[in-house]
Amino acid sequence: MSSSHEALESARLTYEQHVRTCRQCQADGAACAVAKLHLRAYNNARREYMRSGGQGATRG
Ligand SMILES: [Zn+2]
Image 1 (cartoon, rainbow, N blue to C red):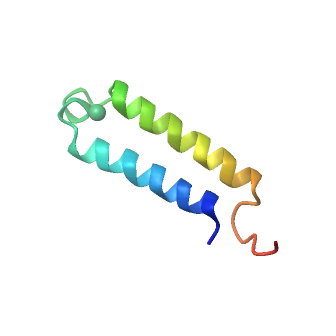
Image 2: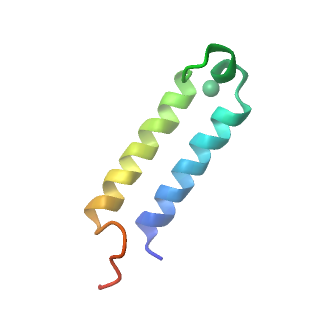
């Protein structure tokens, strides 16, 4: 398990957990400012993960 994959999972969980528990996100049906920050972090983590080899990359 690579660290970039852990970062990706962590960022995704943070974002999903926020959307699930945030009143503003649910009331508006759209991402609030905090959700957008989490989403950006998730996108960055995903980009890092893809750059580091993505799925099935076990060689090192
Ligand atoms: Zn929110």
